[in-house]
Length: 394
Length: 143
Image (cartoon, rainbow over all chains, first blue to last red; front, side, top):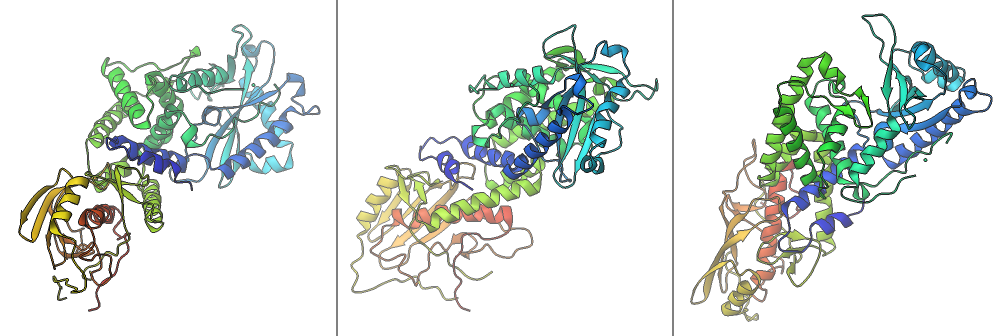
């Protein structure tokens, strides 16, 4: 792993901000949480293969003019490895154009996609029985591919779609619900650009967005990864706080902060301010399709909402506290509680190793007067000469 | 173990105390210096990383003797279940170099050796608290 950013963050500037090292540790946590390059290549291969299978000319779906594209964290670059299991959730949309979609049966709509996938012997073995509104393929140890069938919303034009809703147990039927995965991703990207300009591309199978190295990512994306990780650690069931709610809230509260530390501070503060304004359950709407209430789950289950409020307030308090803490042991303990001990220990081990390697190569210096270790050298630094720690045995 | 405080090699002309003081003043201007004849001590703060605590330390040096380092505050602490802090002579006295090597000699400059080593020691001390292991390497005297 490259140590260049570490070197940069431990800059020789005397007035070095404490948050630079903290930011460096947070970058590394995100790097550990997201899809690795090899997982990414595997996902891309499988994505292309399944896309071909769905869109092929001899496919039973061909008459519906299928269009396949990634959505969710895969599309916007905020994947997070779930705590306690190996598989990532990766979401694809399979858009099929049918007339008067709302008059048709959502279940039959999903079933068309399901049957097409089941007609391939390889995929058949990976298919999970149809329960949710998406067709799930389970690739053991790597990821789930969730394929969400969608139909363009012709009244609305643009990128809005209708998708089957979750099975409605009360009325014993499937419904349609409004969504807009493309519009949502564009909106999210536009929010990231508050800080840094990023470019974007788009028929048939849209290629997967290229993986972004954490250091090229917008602080907003990284902060969303951290929030999702915090959710996985803090809540018993990750489904209680859907990622889309966290992502939307974060993107709305973001106002162009350039470091992960500042970004997380601003977002937590923004969320806490919003939930404190009212005793009612807040509405988180899809910013690109107001017909979609992303916080529906909270409105159906107020306990989930009050639990969220309590925990996000706690996180905010602890986070502010962390910003005023000193001492690597204290800071590590807080980071364990936010993001999980394993991942934090792994990145601390990498940090120690990077200091050790630089020391061995004679590249370690300290900043004059303050004594702060740094790997850059300048007129303000003194090299750490070779030494051997001594003393009586433990 | 019996610790040798004296470090005197008759062939070696020690770097004068005034020169040590001048170097400390140049590199660590916030350190207070107290001097009498051929000895001096310095008190100042070191913070090994920007997320670390700031440690108030004291360096004692007398020409012809080994320099000694003490951590004044915050007091160094044991880890739960451990009986000693690695690489220390006493609870507040880190051993930042191996006396039998020539890492330190009377010809060396304290500001360029003892002080950076102390900062590095403090880094590994904090990491020892985090991970439970001393990552700074080193040697122990034979029993």
